[in-house]
Image (cartoon, rainbow, N blue to C red):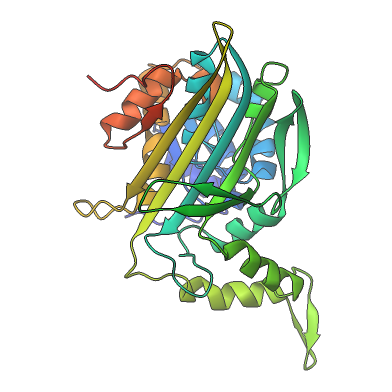
Length: 338
């Protein structure tokens, strides 16, 4: 194992130099520096993304990446990433697309108190996406809306039953701009067990998630930092396996008829490898994208968003070859691996 300070671009450059590509799984606030280091090292770059303000900074690196002959594919994990590829697949399947709805959640196999949630990802990043803004397509135009809004209930087959979904940031990535004028509606919501939304809302209303300091017995305390410090380990539940639930709905027209295609995915921890569901569903799609760039199967320079650059059929076949099962219900079956 090699240790490197991810905050220092010079250190990252030294480790990346001499390699053809880099898959960045650092916390998102280090992504821009990692992308710059990859460009300097002439290495293709892929990250797991999720925080679109950071991704927007990476998108500004298009010209230097082109100059160095490398591709940058940010937001290439699960959501954003795999969900956008499934949407792209459905969009290609229909003559006219009016609506894309994406739902995804990383959950414990069963609800665990007090929030019905297991800390799978960086909890600070989760809260940032909960309460930040996001970009969607509304009436065919890119529109910015507030996260942690528009709660609804979604029904799934057993063992899931009914889950709740609400708007969070990051997962639509560059797709609203890609499909502007072609798709009327394109949106994303995070899935959680029933009751999670109201519990988080209570914490927020009490000020326990505020990021501005308050005075406590003469000491300056940031409520959110205190919450994160206490909750990070309390929500870990190492004995509880995780799962990933994903549903993508694409609606439109085919031969003058209204059509709907639904993609469903339910994956668990792999007992053979020990990889959690979230590790598999974020790491495998990103690794596939990087492999395609490095091998030359996909030729790209500069910014190479997943939905514009990678053939969804080829990409999803590669995903399924790694044991990720996608069920399609709709007018055309998803091509299965040979």
